[in-house]
Amino acid sequence: MSTEPPASRPATAAGKPVKAPDAGRRSERSRRAILDAALALHEDRLRTAREAGQLARDTDLRLTVEMLVGPLTYRWLLRTGPLTHAFTDALVDRVLGGVAGGTTAGVGKVTA
Image (tube, rainbow, N blue to C red; front, side, top):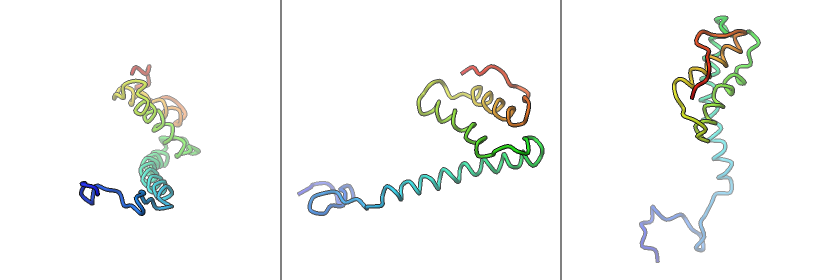
């Protein structure tokens, strides 16, 4: 007999943990819904910039978001370097300068 309070023990059947057969799919759907919503916010902001003529008309918004978020996520997860304002500013300048069809002010050497 367990001395743990019921809330801290997993639900069991015949002494084995019970896991819903579709738990992995539900988890993936939840993760995808949250991530898609967050990325959509970035896409909306880039769409506004594109409509204002600040980005090329044929800019692939999802690809541009991935180009911005990917390096930040990579640096954060793998700890390849500090995630600083200077790094983030240089990344944004370079990515947006590229999709704008030129360079933006402040584009310089990425230094940590």
